[in-house]
Length: 116
Image 1 (cartoon, rainbow, N blue to C red):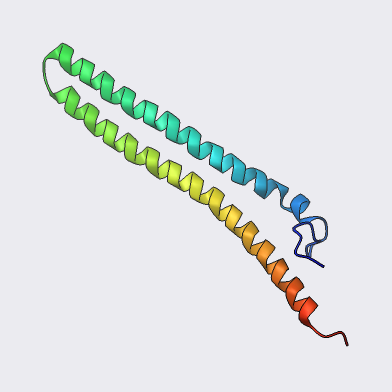
Image 2: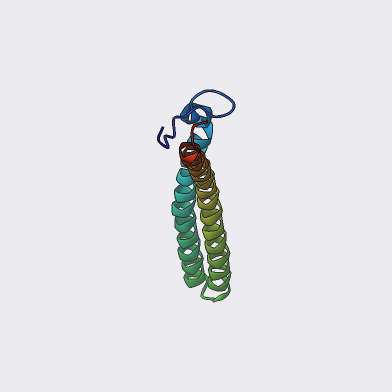
């Protein structure tokens, strides 16, 4: 018996069927990570440009400084959001890998035992 991810888990049913929602959530979290990164970068750059234009129209540097501050805060938030969403997706995948390797190890140990 090989290490197959379709073996029946303790709760019954196919492993891929049993954890289907977790697999879906891993994909959703990865998509959310990339969407948050793209929109966050666009928002950060937009704020920087808009505050720079306001600064030029008013002839003072204060809006540009505020715009740069907002840019930095949004950039940090964007990177943290991306990292968090992506890490959650990878953690779910890690749990699947642990489950798969546990089954493979159990199968190998079972095969190594002498038949009684």
